[in-house]
Image 1 (cartoon, rainbow, N blue to C red):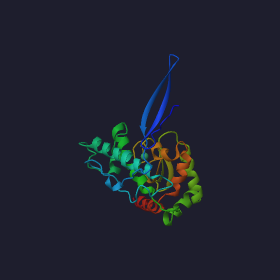
Image 2 (image 1 turned 30 degrees about the vertical axis):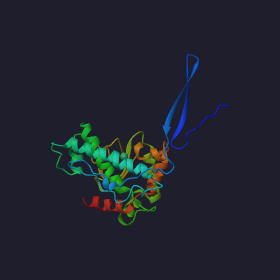
Image 3 (image 1 turned 180 degrees about the vertical axis):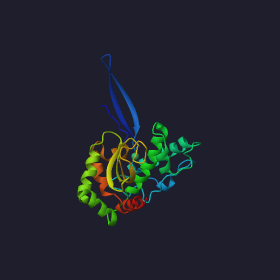
Image 4 (image 1 turned 90 degrees about the horizontal axis):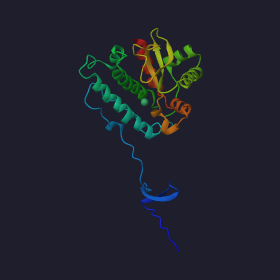
Amino acid sequence: MKKIHFLVLNFVLVTLLLSCNNKKLTEVVEVPLPSAEEKVTIGNPDDIKAEDGSFQLEKLPYSYDAMAPNISPVTMEMHYSKHYYTYTNNLNKAISGTELENLTIEEVLSKLDPSNVEIKNNAGGYYNHSLYWQTIGAKAIEQPKDTLATAITTKFGSFEAFTSQFKEEASKQFGSAWVWLIVDRTGNLQITSTQNQDNPLMRNAVVPGKPIMALDLWEHAYYLDCQYKRKNYVDSFFNVINWKKVGENYEAAILK
Ligand SMILES: [Fe+2]
């Protein structure tokens, strides 16, 4: 009588049956499984520092798990410590030794040549994410207050109408994009969007203005949590918008 022994502590036997010239070939591969005690370790955003250069990462005023369950800790960590970190390093390298090296990021964005894809993509990637980290962070669902609340009601009719219009703009995007709430050049609020890592501060912006709120619609922002259901991510984003900070951004933008 045949006895088959399975290794159950550290390995699992995976049997692949391959067909070759009508003969069956059996291949056994040992694949380690994580032990029951092993947990995914989430790091600390304060440990992430950009390499030497003009720009440093925007500090997160919250931990990677602060957005859960709306945005998972794994998504937050990958987004901040890998994607944002890389944009920051690449921006620093791209502008090193150029006339952009000692400018503010807003100045870099307004002066850069949009045909210089290396600088444009990384300067946009740095600025856009820096604003995104500010845009989210609420511990509970909030609504705009004070001056911004009045401006939103004046422009869009109600907060609900604004929310609907912003989500509609997000739903129209194809591929990697950003949706923005901006103060345009006439001082009015506008919802707009840009492709890739472009933003409304760049010379090539169709709707130019000062962004006060940013929604990242790149797959890396939501795919681990929502897969193809980008709408669910947009709904989750609205649950964690830091309206106090967006309001501060608005008041700073209308002073300029
Ligand atoms: Fe992103």
